[in-house]
Length: 223
Image (cartoon, rainbow, N blue to C red; front, side):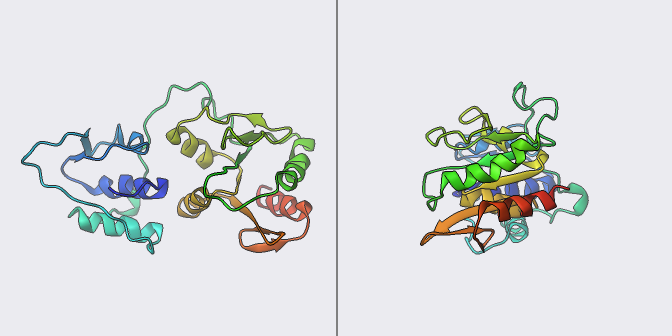
């Protein structure tokens, strides 16, 4: 698979649920960890010379559901049913993600690579309202961006698999990362994508005048 997007490797994981044979994953990337324990994956890297090779170059205009169907078709698999749509994530022994500690929390994913600028003071004001209510906030984004005041610092400590696990568990996700936004849409997460253009702040595409508006939007969604 040529894609380096999390949502695409998760779509592949779901598509492979319909396989009656096992596959070798040829290309090793930071995302192949998602497939390490998949029941339809025999090995990762170094396929036998006589193996048939499937090249998955995912069209960029497909939705998550369309990507699953496209991959199943390309791999000559049965289309997955609603009963076989579970994402098979590898088990983790990490103490950080144990004990369902993120279930009542808000996860903050702020990254600086290839993302639109974002005012950290604006995000700080949003998070302040939740910390004053006793709601835990975890920063799990780029370690080069300052940890937002009042949040618990997990920057650089999570694998990609662990990140997806806690995003599926938490109450809400606040992010400026387009890939996390796309992942949130794909997995029906309660996400809030923030960006800034020409001095105007936006949340999920809607212009926002003050941080309190975002706080209220998130508060209503987690009640």
